[in-house]
Length: 219
Image (cartoon, rainbow, N blue to C red; front, side):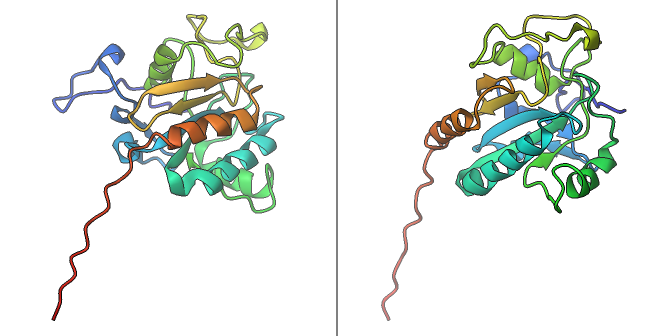
């Protein structure tokens, strides 16, 4: 598995400390097709980041809800970014190229096609975690719905160091505002309705684009 866990770099190639990154939209990650995605393209939108595992018992429900979110909120400025990870419970055995066919035929199945953006597998915890998750956990160290939540299944803790801010399970979610600031974090237990309400709040805060003045020419 190639996690592409590279620190952000400047135009001259030098690594930038995560503490110097001020916006989520300064970051980048590798898509499931192997292409690099620069997050500057999402600047000005509200972003939901989700870590997933295809063999998690909640995958069908979660992916259907994510598609519903994009269907209802996508035209108003929401984008959903999904990062597969095998780190929590060893529930993501698939290769990057196998995930879309798995969604289509198996789970959720019924010719499911994701409306969210699917990335390559990443590490979400430990010293080698992806810069995206390093940044998100630094800015939102505790879930809003359960600030005492930690990974309770010690059998599957395979990273080091273990910290209080670690992602504790599959389908944790982070909301990032239009200016690149992480504003909310949730465990998998958070209700879909609560997350959608908080997304709606952030969508209303996207600055309105000024309407272009129409010049009428009289002949």
